[in-house]
Image 1 (spheres, rainbow, N blue to C red):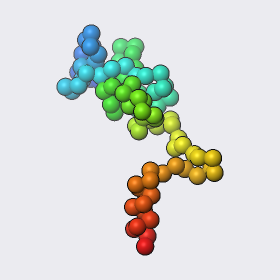
Image 2 (image 1 turned 60 degrees about the horizontal axis):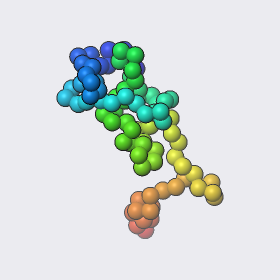
Image 3 (image 1 turned 90 degrees about the horizontal axis):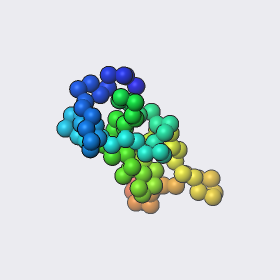
Image 4 (image 1 turned 180 degrees about the horizontal axis):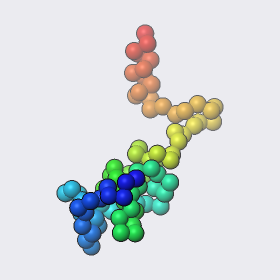
Length: 91
């Protein structure tokens, strides 16, 4: 990404202060994502201030390097609620 993305940011003990948010460094699972920018030798997510929390319950929805999960039959898993809405729409 652009090297001047974090223009005006200030590094503090809590994290990186940027546009009213305190950004935390990326989690290990974030490596390889296209949404990472570097500031003073440390990597930060450009989409979410606390990247580790996005990985707490599975894959981060902002991750560009993670593919959709596939079940044993080879089909992509779909949220059951979304599947029922799609089925109702096609009637």
